Image (cartoon, rainbow, N blue to C red; front, top):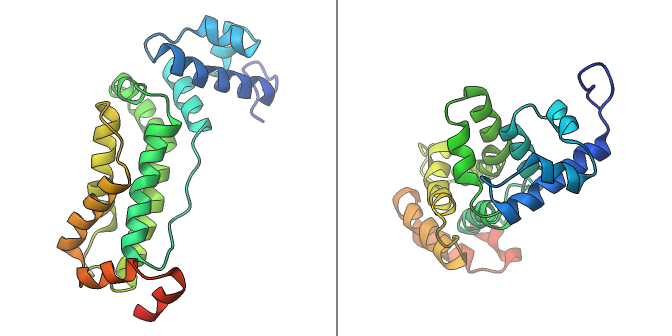
Length: 212
C-alpha cells in the first residue's frame, strides 16, 4: 500500500471506490463530462482526497480503465488460425466491451503531448492485450506454421490496427466473422501452407496434434 503525501498510508478501499466511480461516470457522462465532484460524491470521499492520489485527471482515468481490464492468457488451441482469431476477438473485447464507449480517443489525444502520461496509457491499457497475441504468433513461427522471418510484433500491429481503428472512430467492433476474414487475409501472405492451417482449424481439438 503506497503512502499518501504527508506519510499517511493510502486506503485501498477508497482507491477502489474512486476507480469504480470513475468508470461508471465515464460511461454516463463521457470523458469530457467527467467531474471530480461527482466522482468524489459517488465514491464517498472528497475531491481533495482524489487530487492527493491522482494529481492528474488523465492518470485517474487511465488507472480507472485499467482496473476493469483483464489481461488475457495467450491463446493455445494447437491451431494457429484459431489462436490468431481468438487473439483478435480478445483485443476487440477489451476495447469495445470493457472500456466505456467514446473514452479512449479523447484520452489518447489528451495524453499525446505528455510523454510520461502517454507511456502510462500504453503500458496500462494497450500493451497487455498485444502481448498475449504476440505470444500466439511466436508459437506459430516456432511450430513452422508461419514463415521463419515473420516479425511477431509487426504481425500483431497489423492485426490490432483494425481493432484499434474501429474503437477509436466509433465503428462497429470486430466480430467473429470479420476477425476470421482479417486473420485469413494476413495468413495468406505469411503462412507456409495456408490450406493446411485451414484444415487444422476444422479438426476437433483432440486431433490437431496429428497435423504437427
